[in-house]
Length: 324
Image 1: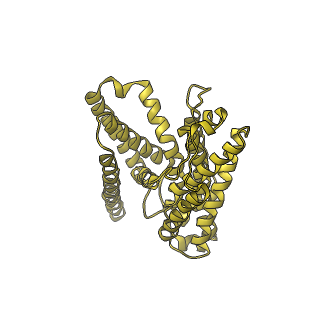
Image 2: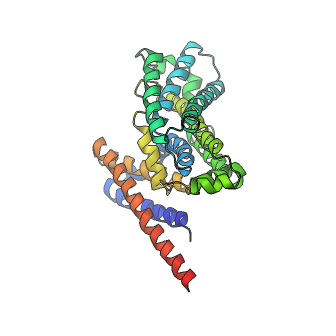
């Protein structure tokens, strides 16, 4: 049994126990289909961005600028929709993803060409991109009355029974799953994160791989920015503020090794679902937002400790087998 399987099984069991306990406390309100629909809607954007964050973490990096990229794309696309109300939602999505690619490429360029540590580079761009939102918007914001009905329906429409936003998240997860597990570039990401020197010796262009994961993270943030503006029908200077903590939490709680080399799409989705259920449950039982943030912090610490303990036991088991 692999570490990833152990973590995913543990998270699944924890989610089941949590659902039972919250149901006993809050009654039918938590178990309603409407509530589960809200949970899925709430975690869809988180899952999309966390999947990009996961690829970055697998390469031993981190992207702290995701919240600012989401906010900047939401603001720029919001203004475009306001100026061109007849713009197709598909064009808005493509524009957002293109803007995200530009922002993600800037991160990748600073890290690979500038040799700046990822945590420093993305901490700097977090502030730069957030400042760009203020500069671009001049402190104003876009509200629901300035967006076309077709754009507002982009995230919330449900022609197949499921909200479009949930369907988009499922499609993105399927693409990332296939990319990481069945393509050579995807396997190169794990190789670079496991041992960069060995990857270099094997002929893998590590800097190109690292650049590409930041570009992909930016692309997914661009998609998330458009969906955010559509779902909440607004774009403000503080859009997605602090969202980077949730994406790191979903990845780490989902079993992604913070030191790189391992992590699965299934684990990240379970991590996002667990965070969504916890936030929903705390809201239902009227716990303050402060304790919701505290719960996320505790989950990250718990996940890292569990990772270390399980990994140590697996290594001890392997050593015993080799000695025998």
